[in-house]
Image 1 (cartoon, rainbow, N blue to C red):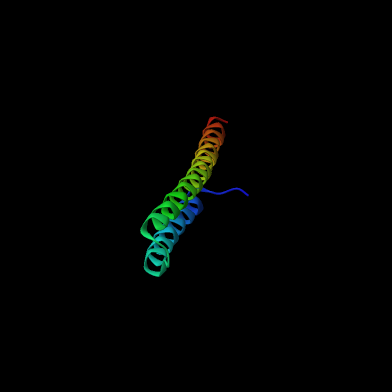
Image 2: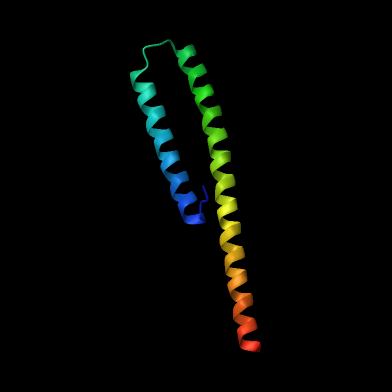
Length: 83
């Protein structure tokens, strides 16, 4: 699946918002001891970090594709003017 830059940024925003809501709900509804909650949050933070890296890479790839497309258009436009 190919992301363009705008789609990847939107996905990252939704992901970050969902992560915040999930952490807040988890803290409010946690029926476990504080140490267990902290361990769970550390595990969750690691998963979020991995997902953020994945989304960041998709965003980078999308931005590179958009940049290449724009460069190709510019080059073809220049060639059209030269003819």
